Image 1 (spheres, rainbow, N blue to C red):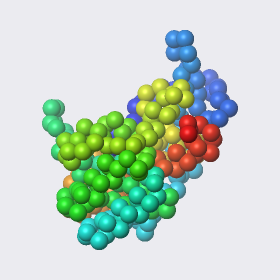
Image 2 (image 1 turned 60 degrees about the vertical axis):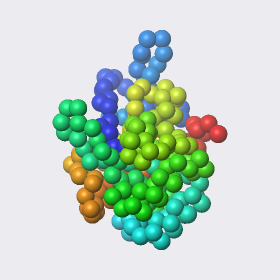
Image 3 (image 1 turned 135 degrees about the vertical axis):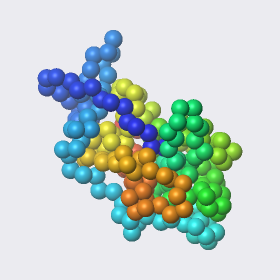
Image 4 (image 1 turned 30 degrees about the vertical axis):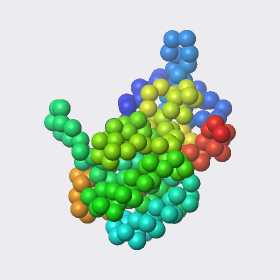
Amino acid sequence: MSTPEPHRRRQRGPASTPSRTPSTRREKSGQADRLIAPTKAETAQLPPFAGLPLSQIHVPVSHAECRSAVDEILAAGTAGFDTEARPTFRVGQKSDGPHVVQFALTDKAFIFQLHHHECEQASAELIASKQLLKVGFGLKNDHGQIRDRLGITLHHVLDLDQVFRKQGYRGQIGVRGAIGVLLKQGFKKSKSVTTSNWSLPKLSPAQLLYAANDAYAALKIMEALQKEGLLES
């Protein structure tokens, strides 16, 4: 689920450079050093992340389209994963999301809008699958909404925030910070799209690109972690 990324405090003086994650800095915190991801301003200076174009983003609706998408995603075995929900603006207001569930493969993404019954069933099958590895950020936030909306448990996940925390990063690094650290690229996230209405019957091109590439970026980060030997097998 898209959530605001935590503020990264700037450090004065030269940045120290860990051997395997050269875009990080170190901060003394008690007895141990903590790694700090590059700031939003710093990643904005990097070459842009090349995400999926609209031509590679699929929005299944019919039973046949959903069944074909589920079969392809399950056959892949691993998918980038995220959810989107219509934002809440009042204190104490409970979200009725997720409204969108997205899965990304190496060359495409599938966007399921849950107001379609076929999409809800397809998403539930993939979410509950213990064979499909779902890779994303902040997945702890998704468990409750998925349980409330779909009545199922999110199984077999790789939460990349937890992976980076084990590497020594504080808090949630988020997709933007991780792309900056590992791929040396800038990942732009529009606040207006983040807080847009995800329960609309038809999503805008900007919403489709945002949703698809959140999931796609998670998959690319996992691949980079594997290449660097930073992911436990």
